[in-house]
Amino acid sequence: MKTIMTVDDSASLRQMVAFVLTGAGYRVVEAVDGLDGLAKLTSAVDLILSDINMPKVDGLEFTRRLRALAEYRFVPVILLTTESHPEKKQEGKAAGATGWMVKPFKPDQLLAIAKKVIR
Image (cartoon, rainbow, N blue to C red):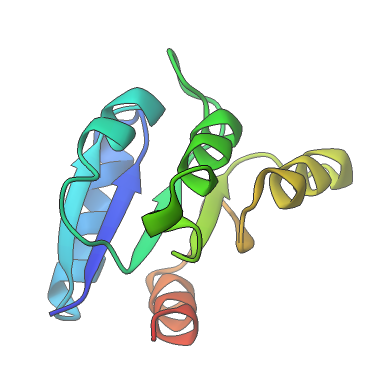
């Protein structure tokens, strides 16, 4: 079973993402911010979905720190955010994000991205 980590300070968004992904057969690990996400990286994850705007460690810093860890260098990271400015997308790419998805999203969009990036 493939594992997806969702990193978002919104409990309702984490629940919605988890509901969609577990319904499609994925295992989901939830983290409340980037610091929590880094702490929960004890098991292998196949995909990480991260918000950008979070307390403590935001999604861009989380992605940078993740990319500095050899075992997570190639794990796909999709930034799932309300941000849609080209500058923010460029920051995400520079931090090491694989892709970008704007909230709100449709469940089938989320599943299509998961299937596309998980090997």
